[in-house]
Image (cartoon, rainbow, N blue to C red; front, top):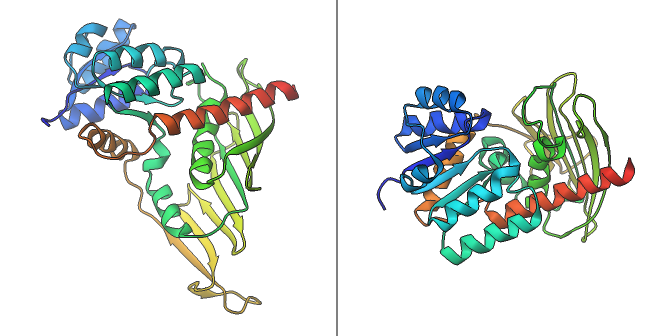
Length: 311
């Protein structure tokens, strides 16, 4: 097909980044945001027009929905009904019923419905998946914390930050999620700003996930445990270490086992994500589809329910 034109709903933090990159690549058809001043500012930076909602759909082959979560379902539904492919930032929608509606509509119309789980397109996760190579996981520990920033405050830290690690864990554990427990609290907003969740899967695998947007500093780590010992990933240090029978550095007191270290060169994950969306529009297979986005939302909502029950 011809080079697709992509319109953007939303000129906020992520909408702006999407617009700048699409503008640079020549795929941007226009921008819509109810805040006229903000829309004009971002459109000027990206070199596109500010359009009304209907005009944006008419000018586009596909759209990116980068608005507050409350509006995801309405805008994505309108785009799919207009025959447009849709990329919607995470979480896919505010409710599972809304997600189900979009998934069914996209399937019915034969259109792409991709969810903005950007970590799936990072160099770090690609290196992790390559290094796992058949390792069986029994337990996982994920930590994602950051200092407070006044954005994405329309959702809890679970839907803001933790959902990335929930999506990653769901992609690594093949069994259904069976049980969720959680504790958390609000500090700067009326919604939970930190949370610690314990997950148990039907095959016995367990995971602990910690997320905070009111932390002293940045930390992003993942620990994976199984019959071969541990694998440790420090995403900020770009380091991965794991034990294996054919490991590169012999481990004291563990005959036949070695420690292997890996690193990676970061690439622009948003550019990689947009490239994946373009390929999906052309009929290619893609990750973070509507079903996967719904699964991440389901896990996040179960964590939120557990938080409410523990309050």
